[in-house]
Image (cartoon, rainbow, N blue to C red; front, side, top):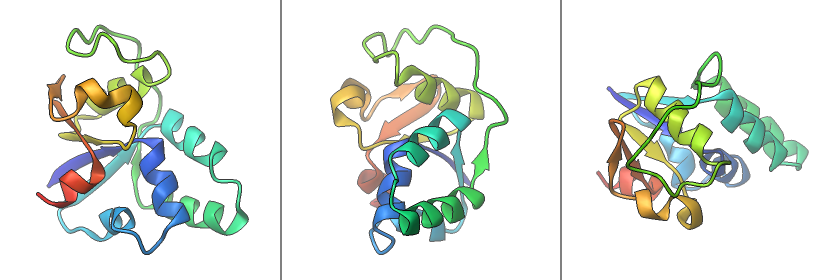
Length: 130
């Protein structure tokens, strides 16, 4: 079973576009979707529409959410990752995820396609094509 950690932008996309390919992540067999409180809070902040917020909560309810944020630790393979995105990568590593899916090309761009701390950073579409 794949352990797949989702960044907030993936949650937001699925909540805003329930018929999108990204929303299809929740229907995949043999996939465990993961997130952290930090990710969920960020997603909630970016989904102001009540109907989409309700869909977001339904999606979150079908995921495993870490009980707490991990402590800061070194990730020498991702030295340029902005401070606001480090908690996402660290939580993916600590969760034991095999994949971190994010659409944040601006901040995670140098990480795409690489394995950092045991986690392969990918675009959601690339994962869905596997």
